[in-house]
Length: 137
Image 1: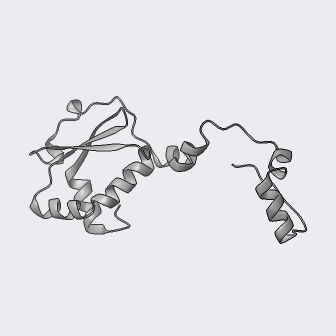
Image 2: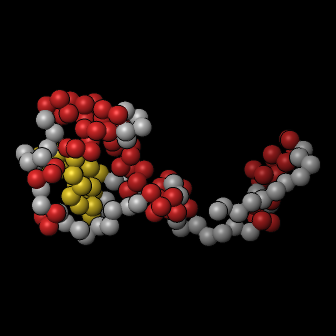
Image 3: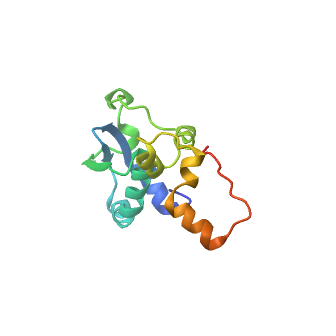
């Protein structure tokens, strides 16, 4: 978030604590003071975008108000049911949108793709010299 807006990223890092993720709901606790509260409220659409990119498009956000600063919350009070996703996990998982679209699909045969009416029409219109089918990595 800091690469989009340093001030927003700093406010988020010092004021927001991830509490729980269950049943497609991400629960976070906020200890933001008035100045950070305004900044975070203004950036709520960006925050929502990042949450949905990481946890899935159907994810809802539940905010809890916490008066204690982030550093004062003991680690043992934080639920550890859900493992926090690392950048490597997200990279290996691919796009949440692609996962949602392709999660129930099986691999398609190349001949099946070439016999698709849409592909046939595109082939007629563009007259390609060569058609290559690459598997999704």
